Amino acid sequence: MIIAVDGPAASGKGTIARALAARFGLPYMDTGLLYRATALNLLSTGGDPESEFAAARATDIAQIDLADPELKSETVGGIASRISAYPMVRQALLERQRRFAAQEGGAVLDGRDIGTEIAPHAEVKLFVTASPEVRAERRLAELKRMDLDVHFPDVLADIHARDARDRDRAAAPLVMAEDAVLLDTSEMSAEAAIEAAVAAVEARLSAA
Image (cartoon, rainbow, N blue to C red; front, side, top):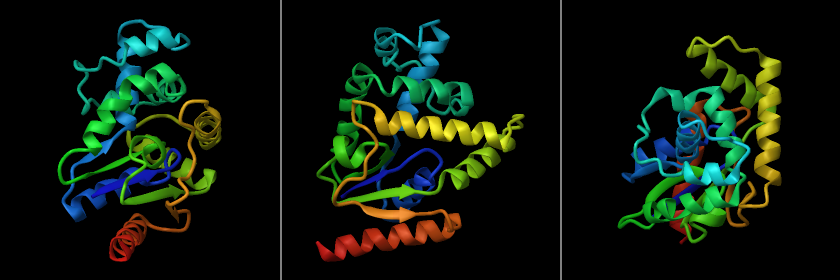
């Protein structure tokens, strides 16, 4: 069984995807980490984020530790958002994601284009979203836990900018798959969102 979890930044899709992987005993991939690792590799080698060719070369991320906390930094996240719009970067990382999804027994993947590009044949597709203001509050809390000096207006502006880049890019834009279940977590706690996601998956499986 493949479960595709898509949605914009800070919507809660990662929390939900990890919980679904644990609940159904499936391997999990945060595909956003691949783009963040590419961004960190680009930074560490002095590459130019404005160059699609430099960004594409940086997709060789074998030497990047995917547990490195630097991957969660705002600097890396901002560059990852920008270079993820490059078709060459997306193509370079495409097969790695598809191989993960295609492994025996299935998998859970979260990202922006799992249900539309990476695994359009997924048995279950969720599109997780929330209002920009709620997502900015969540991201602000996360950054403050990292002892970063950040302010709500700046975080909200970044959320809007990332949404625009994700939605308007030519290569695999953020869009809800026609057969996806919409899950708006704006008014939900993490626990309630997970419960709703589990219920949605079980309902899809029982209807199959």
